[in-house]
Structure formats: C-alpha cells, structure tokens
Amino acid sequence: MNRYILFFLSIWVVLTGAAQVSFTAKAPSTVGVDEQFRVQYVLNNAEGEQFSNPSFPDFECLNGPATSTYSSLQVVNGRSSKSSSVTYTYILRAKKKGTFHLPVATIHANGKVFKSNALTVNVAASTPASRQQAQSSQQSDDDDDFFVQTQSSSSRLSQKDLYFTVGATKRQVYEQEPIMLTYKFHAKVGVGLANVMLRQKPDLKGFWTQEIELPHNLNPTLENGYKVGTNLQYVIFPQQTGKLTIPGITFDCDVIQQQRGLNPIDAFFNGGGGFGSKVQRTTEDLTINVLPLPQPKPAAFSGGVGHFSINNQLLTPEPKTNDIATLRVTISGSGNMKLIKAPFIKFPKDFDSYDAKMTDHTKVSVDGITGEVYFDYTFVPRNIGKYEIPAAEFIYFDTASGQYVTLHTSALHLDVKKGNRSKEDIEAEMALRNSDIRGIHTESSEFFNAPGLCNSSLPHKTAFFGASWGWLGSFGYFISTGLLLMMLTGLLRLLRKHLALRADVSGTRVRKARKKANKLLRGAENALASNDHRAFYGALAQALRGYFADKLNADAAAMTNESILSALQERGISEELLQNVKTMLEDIDFARFAPNVEVSQREQDIQRVSDIFNNLDQQLKLK
Image (cartoon, rainbow, N blue to C red; front, side, top):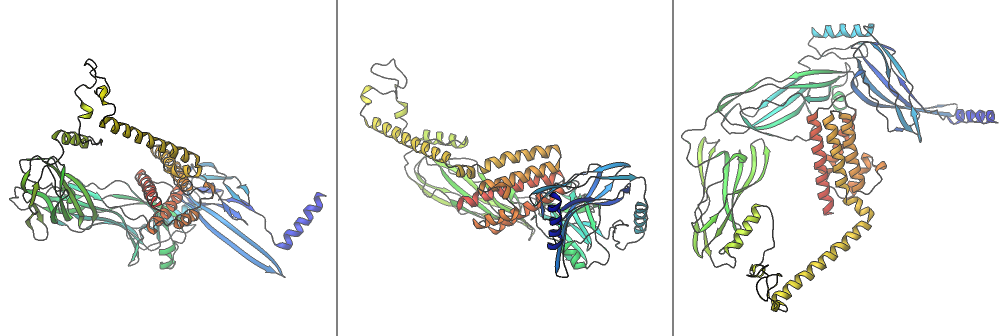
C-alpha cells in the first residue's frame, strides 16, 4: 500500500512541478592559512525565517551573513516547474592550521525546522589559492591604481583608495572662541565600508569640548569619484593660548572591495559584491593658533566670547513683604554660553537675596553653542516702600569686532506693600526649597503650635493639639474634621482606581511596558560588561521588541519591523520618531551579525533605545 502512495506522490510532483525543500551548507574542503573563503547555507524552494546565524570561533569572520535570493519558472510542453533559493553567505579567514568543523545552521520553513549538513574544513599551511592571493597583494603594493578582489585574488588598499581627514572651521582663533572640528572618511567608489570603529577618542587637551550627535542615518555624498562621509564632530573652545596640537586619531575599518568594471553609480548606492579586509587609517595632526584676549581685561568681564544680547524680567510682578520673588536675566546669542558667569545684581539692602540659578536652553552648532541661558535670582523684600533694582552689567568679548562689549539690563522699580506672610514662614519655605521638599503652607502656625502642645501636666489640657476640652465644637475643630474627611475620600478614590487598574489586564500590560523594558535594558548592560556584543544586541533587541509588544498590546512573536512601524504610524507617531525606530531596529539586526562592535558604540545604542522609550512614552501619552 505504501509503495502505491509513494508512486502516486512522485507522479503528482512531476505533473505539478512541486519542488522539494532542502537546506544545505557549502564550503571548500581545504584552504590555506590567512586565505579568505566563503561558507554558504542555502535554503531551496521555501521561504525561511529565524535563521540561526552560527558563529565561527576557529575562523575570523570578515563579513556576513549576506543574504541573496534566486527564483526561476520554466514551462516545457505545457508543464511548469518553479525553483527558488535563499543563500546566507559568510566570508571567513583561516587563522591557523588544523581540521575544523563548521557549525550546523537551522532555519524555519513551511512550519518545520530544517538543519544543514555538517562540514569539515582542513586548513593547510599554504594552498595554490592562498599563494595566488599573496602574489596579487604583493603586486598591488607597486600599483597606486585601485585593484579589486575576486575569489582567487585580492589586493591591499592604497592611501588613495581610503583615507580620513580632520578639518577645523578656523585655524587661528581667540581664547574661548568656538571651533567646529570634523572628521571625515574618503572612500573611492567601489570600496565598501562595512564598519568604521574609532580606536581612541581625540586628545583634546587644552580645549573645552562638546561632541555633536550626528544622525545615525547620515548618508555619504559623492565627490569626484569618492564617497565622503562624516564620522565625528566636536565644537571645541581653547582654554589656553599659543599653538595647540590635536594629535591624529586611528580608525579601524572593515572594507569590502568591489569588482573591476562595476558601474560607479551602482557601486555607490548598492555596494555590489566582493571580499572583506581590515585596514587602519590615521588622520594627520592639526595645529590651532590661539590668540590671547586683549589686555587689560575689564574687571567685570563675564568670560563670554562670541556675540550676545541681554534682557531682564521680573517673574513676580508685584512682590509684597516676605514674598519670595524671582528676577530673570536672559542672555541670548552664540559662543561659549555654558562658560559665562552670572551678571552681578545689586539688590536693595532691605532685600534678602540668593545665588542665581542657571537654566540652559542651548544647542551645539557651527557657531559654537547657540540659544539662551536663564539666570534666576531669588529675593525677598522685608519692608514696605519704593525700591529700585539697578541695571546689571554684562561684559563679553566680541570675536567679530575684536573688542570688549558692555551690555546693560534695564533698571526695575518696585512698590512693595505689606504682605500676609511672616519671616518664619519664608525661612521655612526657603529651607524646603533648598532641600527639594515641598510642604503644605498654612496661613497661621498658631493652631499646631499652641502653648500647651503635648504638655499633659497643665490642668484641663490634653496632648491632642495642646487644646482644652472647649476646643470641641470650635472653628478649628470643624476645619480639622473637614480635612480628615477630605483625606479619607481621596484615599477611597485612590483605592477604587487601584483595584480597577489591577482588573484591567491589557491596560496593566501597557502601563508596565517601560518598567519591564528597563529590566531588560539592565540585562543588556550586563552583557556590555561581559564584552559579548552578540549577547548584548540580543538583549537589546529583546528589550526593544518586548517594549513595543507590551506598549501596543500585541503578540511579541508577531512583532516584525514592518508591523511595529505600521502600528506606530496608526497611532500618529511623528515621522522623525518613526525613522529613529526604523533605523534602530535595522542597526540592531545588523550589529548582531557584525564581526565586532566596540563598547563605545554599544553604550551609544543603549542611550538611543532609552531615548526612543522616552519619546514614545511622551507621544503615546498625548494621544
């Protein structure tokens, strides 16, 4: 019976053109030390998912997995046959002699799990292919023209093919004058930069620095046959005079070279194919000539260098005696705004005044730090009368004119009238402000500080509020009773709300999405300390996708990149945030399979994910 079933099945396969699903691994059986070779996992006649992405501890992984697809349809004598394949390709380099087993990969297709066949690679001291690679590399040392890797030959990149530069908006500046420092790569078309890692931060001794956060999806431009892109940007402020040298820095690059004759435009936009290699490039030293500020400096010089304006505003329009009032001085412009000193305000002697509090509303730009800073001065008038707060003076050095400029605020006139608060009230509130504790203000403290408080030795007194039995039925009694009833009513409402929230399962899941995601982020931080970048990005992906599943109240297993972006778009999330989410998801997927990702980049990715959580929480809360 079984033979008949198999016979008819085979006839059905032939007639319908149905193809058998298979998952196989391919690799050369013998390679040489330092030779590059391909390992391919091929899924035939099915669409796969959840590819296991094997690791290769005995080899150096230069690139992969790179995914390619193939499909064909043939019709012969009225019969059609269709075939397709998906190939996952790795480029490896043999590190040492020996016989090594390549890992078995798995993939999900048609509701089943398929495993690839096992492979063994013998690494010998030298093979004809590896010798040919070495000869080709030697030839490229004598040739400045760009030469391309193929399966049987490779070459080194010359400095003309790939180099890094550092540029400054100004080479001669005054002390504290801002400079924009930009590091760029220049890659000849056909050289694919798979990864660029900074070996060490720039040595910017003698400068106050502010790094500019570059857009993660910043695309390179095409200039005279080179792809040019920005790697790092800083705004730096020299803190000393003379010639200051910024030493060159080194970048580690993973490079994929393209085939000779590839269309330059196609190579620029989609990369093509080729083999990977690792190279290092170092920028040249940069010298900045820093001029001293003209002497003598004014006695009240604020330390500001740039171009500024100033104004003042009384935030408490008509302060009365013992009122806590605020005077705000706003400095706007561009320059070293975070380094300027607060202007001196000479308050009347009948006022108590406190140190200014600075609030920063600036951003980093080519002109330095632009925007405005607020200096809030807190003061308390003690007596009634007419007073004047004199104009404040602000002196800065203007880089355009090369001179010191003096600005003044306007003088303010106050008519202070009698207030209702006591000096003790003000002292208590200022103490609370300084300790970041907010108390409940009462118009009179006599009720809670009666002479007989907790003094049970006095006749006809009790320890309750220090009042006599005659207190029952008094005005204070009714006020206290009313406050107690209000508190009990509020507690009952909170209890009902708490019980309702616990009963709302889906709502609870949405509300606790951030808390759960933060725990998973801590798991990513632990993986960061272990220096296992694949475990790190696995934990980061789990935190990000789990957050979306909980926040959108969806099935975590069904949360693909497309479904996440579609769901967020339906909820009215801004295009900018959607792009940030899309880029983050793609970067995590790429980094999980990258050969190496430095700790500094992983730290930045944790912060990027945290920023996405914050922005999404805020936007979804407003919907």
